[in-house]
Image (cartoon, rainbow, N blue to C red):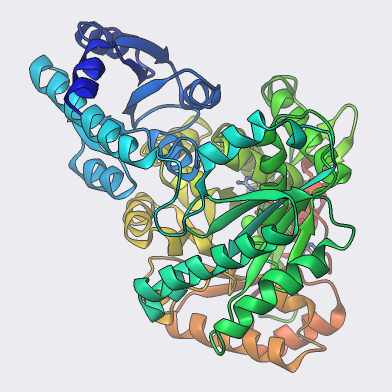
Length: 569
Ligand code: C2E
Ligand code: CA
Ligand code: CA
């Protein structure tokens, strides 16, 4: 052990500094480079790219929290979500107490306060974090997982690389098995029971390999990788050998598995890429409780390529004006005649090759990469500018709602960004409604409520989007500082045919009544739905029943009509 420590002390380790401001970057680099090699990233995207490129051998990340493009919190979250990166210690750079606690909760090792006026303290903190990290790694990097006796992932991949027969001589199947809601089982039945379940799954997989050529490992607590000779009837093989044995042993607790499969890997593709694909298929089952098995296939691969292409083109597309803001009207239906009361700004990508792409396709991609903030700012600006144009032209102040992605909410500059936008375009904050999806609240209720309070104090109105899908508790909802609830389209679609959904809409209307906030029903398509909602006392309706989202010039006709009918002007 002593020898190892001495050896360890002699190598210069590499540190990644992620900091957008040049002065800070240089200052910190100057301090740190006395004892370490330094790699720099100017933003979060670049940092993730460096970390994900193999063999960079980064020992520690110094991460600024306030950065454009992708905030440090998002970078931290990505690192901690990535099985290959999550163990790299991260020290955050911040000047805010609130951010310190939050980042520690998110898995940061430590923090360094700004400004950087105590070089010795900084170096000491870095040294300690690295030592801690390397000691746990020494223990971790043994060949076998102590709980199940299976290989660790690292050795699993090593072995496969070494063995000729796995490298294309015979067709093999790659399988990723994950235990559904394992953390719940742990919580409800205790960790010992959870451990017992894991060893049992391991045992079943090992005995499967008595009959078939292959190798198995456990990766992150409840995930197993299996690489074995190709099975024509793989579901049957796994059912007979794994699922039934588990269900027999754990009667009454209903252990669910999700299994991703990538079959017939005969090529000399890198084994980690092969398992990435099987894992991809497995993760696709996260919200699908109906199916146990999912296969990686060419269409998934094509989708990945398509997604990557869109991401790579994003910046250029934004510069070239390929993104357009459409507007969908919301009508107040309380009186005899429906009245235009506001609009929702919805973005579209007019792609030169693929045509009009719906946000449902590209928004999730951009959210995953932090690019969404850039797009949202573009949309907010566009909507505010448009609002002003209509204010002047029609002397009619139509409130416009914009979507605020969950990534935006963590951005500490959100408030100032929005204030800048309304000032720039000479509109009042109250003319901008901010739609925030319900599930964002449930992730980090306290932090979000806090930023929302500030926004409301500035005069912005807040709508809770997709209400009913985010599983907030009634108790939480009653404490939320919001102005409008939007009932999700999911409930509206079936409300005329399903009693359950009708009941649900009634309940949601009652809740909003109780809270004294108004309600928007979204996705209303038919007269039947319209009539039913009106009868139930719903205030505001958005949906194809009135209009699809329209380009600004077409939407202007709706304003003209409204102005004419209301006797404005
Ligand atoms: P959302 O916020 O729930 O927006 C409502 C979606 O429902 C829109 O889809 C709208 O076109 C659609 N819709 C409205 N009425 C009807 C109807 O009667 N029937 C049907 N079938 N659909 C209706 P869209 O424009 O495709 O947007 C999808 C989602 O993408 C939005 O869901 C929102 O979450 C996101 N999104 C759109 N624009 C932006 C944006 O600028 N920023 C961010 N962060 N997200 C955006
Ligand atoms: Ca919305
Ligand atoms: Ca919605």
